[in-house]
Image (tube, rainbow, N blue to C red; front, side):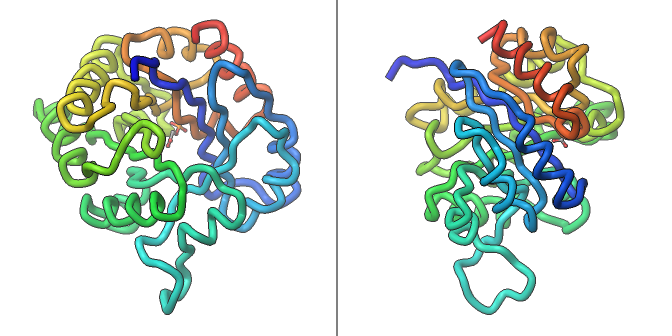
Length: 248
Ligand code: PGA
C-alpha cells in the first residue's frame, strides 16, 4: 500500500482527425514500461485505433453516458467502450462542461457508470481565468472534487487531471508555483477523502508540449499529463513520453 502513483501520459484527440489519420497516429505512438500511455481517439475510430496501436499503449474514450444500455439516442455507454477494449474514459472535461453544461452530479454518474463497466476514469477539474483572477481557483476545484469523487474511487479506477480552463489550447500554461500548489491541494484532498488517495495519479493538462513537458512533469505531485494539441502529432507526443520516461 505504499507504492507511488503510476505515471500516465494521456492524449486527448478531441474531435480531430479522420479515420486514416487516426489509425496512422495510433500506430506511431510509443510506450515506456515506467508509465501508462493512453490515446483517446474520437468515438468512431476507437476500434480501428485499438487494432493499430502497439500493445502496451492503452486506449480510451473522451466521454461516456451515465446510463446503461437502453433508450438514450446518440449516447455511448461505458459497457460499449469496454466492449471496444477501452481501458479508460475522460470525464468532466471542461469542453464538455462548457459545450454540454455538464455539472458535478452528471460527471459523478458517468464515473460510476464507467467504474461499473470496469473502466478507469480521468476526472478533469480546473478553474476559468475569471475564477483564478478572483482568487477562487482552489474553491472551484474543491467543489468539482466534492461533486464527483465518491468513496468507491481508488487508485486503480481513477486519476485526476488538473486543467486550468484558460490554459487549454491557448499556448498558456499555469506557472510552476500555481501547478505545484493546486496539485498539492488535490493530493491532500484525495488523502483526506479516499483510502488510497496517496496513490491516485494527478495529471496536469493545458498546453503541455515537448518544450515544456520536462519542467511540468518534474513539479511535485505531478504524475503525468493530459495532452490535447500536442497529442495529434506522433513526434510531439512521443517526445513528451520520452521526457516523462527521463523523469519517472
Ligand atoms: P491542450 O488540451 O493540450 O491542447 O491544451 C489539453 C486538454 O484539453 O486536455
